Length: 383
Image (cartoon, rainbow, N blue to C red; front, side, top):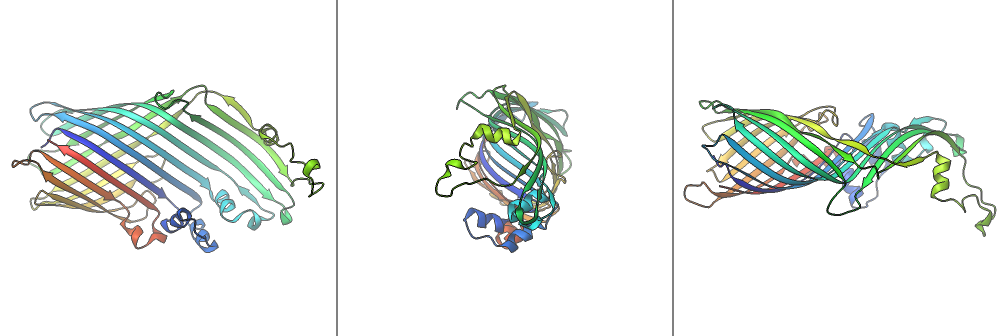
């Protein structure tokens, strides 16, 4: 088994419980979006959840068969967004407030984003002939952090004569002033085990993939409000001359006072969600592999990701893995992973490996029912 490797990969992902790929494509292409398409998405859930991620990693692992320890060092960049809003706020965005005449609609939601880079060290130790234990620690620097929590409601009077807004929010935001050394710093850690009996062809691994935090400096901006306002429009005295109009002298400060927004500079801490995983695989003598996988971030998703894998090696040069997974919202999707090896010597102990993977092949045939998309590409040299 190859103990040494140089690895580079890039990954992009999107998942939602409501917004499907057909609507997302229309938004991306700036196409006309019908009310029926919005209604289809709106009716799917009592809330609207969207998560996106982009990442790129380069790293190396080294060790030997005779050594008890194996080491890994990785440099990663990652950008993540998570949006979770109430059905009422989703309806206001999709349809405006006209359908809610003489009704009070909730406007609750959270938006979190974090753009960071991480230097991670991984140590793997052989505890016995059948058990390996791994631990990791990462140093984090963030260039951007955003954490908001909004609770409120809006009442629309008959014919839109006035709006009653009742809201409370807490918004914390940070943007690095330098491009090299970021002030927001933190740590991540992880731990796992791999169990495999030498006489068996079964493998089991599980653990904490990652958890951590980022401490953001006191120069960060924080916006808070807890108030109620009534909005009944603007006064325009003369449409040909706006000198006596009520919004002539409206500026940022006056808007903040009107909406009851308090701004301050203070530090805060934001978390990197804990993510747990488990994987069982059985390798048959005919080059077939069967496996079951689970991945769960309880602070982000209500349900765990679960996948069933069926893979096969083709003359040790090509590996294909077809899998079914439930995403994180109990919807069935089809994925495919392909890895090709280019051997560099007769003993096949040195080779290049190119891997490509996507978990949403069904987006090609049923985009209106597919609420996710991802892609992974990886290049590795193993020796």
